[in-house]
Image 1 (cartoon, rainbow, N blue to C red):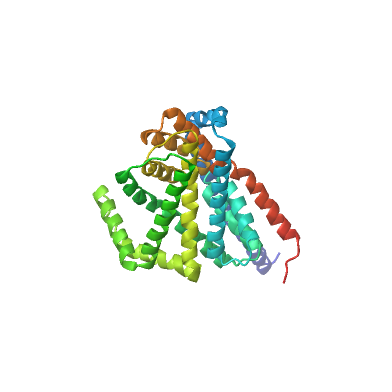
Image 2 (cartoon, rainbow, N blue to C red; image 1 turned 90 degrees about the horizontal axis):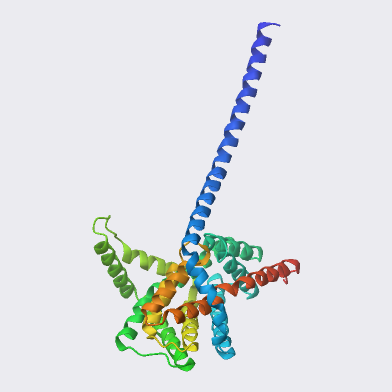
Length: 363
C-alpha cells in the first residue's frame, strides 16, 4: 500500500470516528432533557404522594359524610347543580370572548376536557391548559390567538380571586346571616354586583389600579423587610391590564361580567350548601373561607388542591361559626358539585371534540 493511500485510509477512518462521536454527543444531548423531564416528573409524583398522605385523613372525613347527603332535599341539590351550571356558562362565555371564537362548541368541549384533566393529574393546571390549547388549535383556532386568549382569561379569573377578601370586609363590619335560599341568592347577587363594580374601577382607571399596585408593593415589602424590595408593581399591573383588555378587545366589559358571575355563582353554591343544612354564618366570613379554598385549590402538588381544599375549607367554616359536623357536610356537598361531578363531563368534552373532528367543517 502506497503512502498516499495509507493517508487516505486513515483520514477516512478518522472521519468515520468523528461522525460516530458526534452522533453519540447528539444522542446524549437529546437524552439529557428527557432524563431531566423524567426526574422532574418523579419528584412531582413523590411530592404529590407525600401531600396526599398528609391530607388523606381530611379527604376521608369529608367523603365519609356522604351518608348524610339525605339532609339535602332535592330542591337544594337542584339549586346547587344549577349554580354550578351557571359557573360553567360564565367560563365558556369568558373564554369565547377572549379567544374570539366564532363557535361555542370548540370552547365548551375543550374547557370540559381540560378542566377534568386539571382535577385528576398532579400539577394538572398546566396539563389541563395544554390539552385545551391543543383541542382548540385542532378545531381551527390560531395557535397565537389561542395562547393569548387563554392567558388573558386565566389572568382575569385569578385576579378576581384576589379581590374577594376586600369585598368581605363590609359584610364583616355590617354582619348579617343567611336564613334561606332567597337570602343566599341575594348575597351572591350582591357579590356579583360588587365584583363588577370593582372590576370596572380597576380595569377602566389607571390611577386606581396603580394605587392597588402601590398598596400591594408596600405590604409585601413590610412583611419581608430582609428580602429584596419589590419595585414596579403599579406599572406591572397596568401592563397586565392593558394586555388583558387588548386581547379581549371591545367586549372586555362582557368578559368582566362573565368573570364576576363565575365566582359569584360558585360562592352561591357554598351558601346554598350551608343554608340547606340549617347553618347560618355571616356571609362575609363564608366569603373569606371560600376565598381561602380557591387559593388552596391553586396548590399544584395535588390534583385540583385535593385534600388541601377539604381541610382548609372545613377549618375556615368552623372558624366562621359553623359546627364541625356541618362544616364537613357543607364542604362535601360543595366539592361534590364543584370538583367531583365535573370529572365525567371531561369525557363528554372529548366526545364532542371527536365528533367535530370527524364531521366535515362547513365553509
